[in-house]
Image (tube, rainbow, N blue to C red; front, side):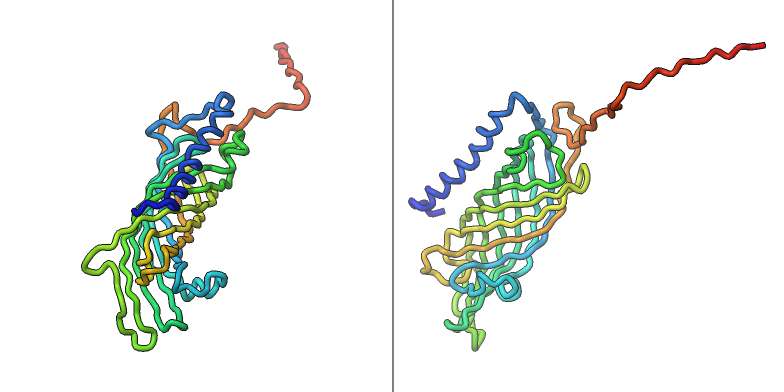
Amino acid sequence: MRLNYKNIKIISFFLIILISPFILEAQYHNTYKQKVGFRDGWSVNFNIGLTSFFGDLSVFDFHIVKKISNESKFGGGIIFAKEISPVISFNTQFLYGGLKGTKESSNIYFKANIIEGSLNGQINIIQIFFPQNKYRKINILGNFGIGLVSIKSKLFNLKTDSLIHSFGFGRKTIESILKIGFKINYRISEQYDLVTNFSNRRVDTDKLDSQPGNNNRDFYSYVSIGITYKFQNNSKNGFKHKRYKKPFKHKYPQKKRLKRKVKRK
């Protein structure tokens, strides 16, 4: 990864976001002493969705339907996550997807495949502002991270389909990425969540579309839906996902029934 002033600012921004939830959580830690043990809070997510390209060869960035049909391809991934507290969690994500784009004015188009691995932090935004309820049905999480992506990209002539340029064939092309996005979790049951995820990747290269020299402005996004399975543990110190039900209290005190003695004749 080539570090410059712009990259240092971006990394510093991510570090500030990473530290801030610890500070916010400490403010009400004495009131809500919920901790997660090492064996607890583990989960795995399987997801499928669309990877879309944003760069020199993308022309439908503001047209959703055409963006999906002309500049998006299917992708899929797996995420291993560890909950540190009700607010903070970390995960490792592996993603495979495709990219494509066409620019008729330049008479070129490209196709690419990506394999990505990343380390990410997550903040439960709802939990920060409403810490009293940890068992709500819907949670919104902000996620951010860094990673590496392996790129195989080919640039073609639009009229003749002849190859103009390529990256990642014969010699591997691996570049760094910065990620930011959000996800919405819907709690189906104690062990399963339905997850909708949107995240954007800035790639520190021009090789996604095989067109070097555009000042590193290439991005790709991943919009997905998936299922999360939460591994259960019987540890007493672990964060339980069971809803606590208060005992029902009658509005008026009930009178005790007097037992009648039955006289025997």
